[in-house]
Image (cartoon, rainbow, N blue to C red; front, side, top):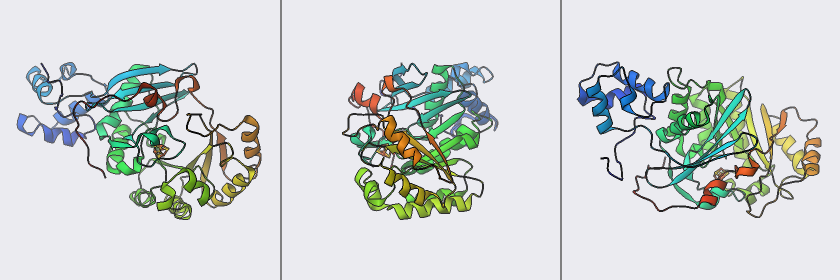
Length: 359
Ligand code: SF4
């Protein structure tokens, strides 16, 4: 019988070479790592015993020393519009969410990178929880594998934009993107993987210099420093002008890319025509797309703008040299905004804490 607090390491989130290195004492041929990796990612195996082309003695040894899945499903809500929201419990009793958004032919999974978040954006339910810990690469990859299994859909797009700030868990997020995009695994097209940041400026430069094949999204949410500081405390450390300089540097390094700027519309805070004009001025020099998101009321003291206000904001952007889209609110009937399901279900006591170090 396995102990209640199972400390066997998971092989998810490891490259074939890393898996091979873990097998060093098992005396296995050099192709085993890749064989196991394919079972985990391509065939979405739940147990080592399923791995029928491995010797039975090895399967048993693997079962004794390692595990595969570590996320326990606490709840799954399916919206009328097909959006699915999952609440998972980790081995240490902490909880996190992922959201699956079908929009044929695309199926997007918005996955979490941290439990809670330290950035405390004022309009965000996750920000109110504070920060607990970084997720491991395996815990990120597993959100995709489990969502694929539960929904019965092939996930075509990945956005690192659920709970947490991905660039504060940088190296693990990059490794997760590599594994998710690996043609020998889940094989999500690199251009359909997007990493989102709220504005950790030094990491934008690092990401640009490392020339990763994935997209970049920036949660902007404000057209000037004053509004940004009011709703995103992070702006005091990384002011708007520095953020925009980092964005310009990124598109300068990637001649065929554009950045997606996310902008949540909060009634009376950032949704006036004057804000749209300011936005036009700061975004026009950058190759980008603007995604407007009418606020999904999370009961945090902010209000969703009316249709009329959204339209007025859009009208003020008519001359924009970049694409502007308005995201329909998805999953309104299932608390699909960031952190809402977690808050609704409440926290549970931790079972055994295995913290991951900060970046
Ligand atoms: S919006 Fe994103 S970065 Fe801001 S507190 Fe929420 S999870 Fe963190």
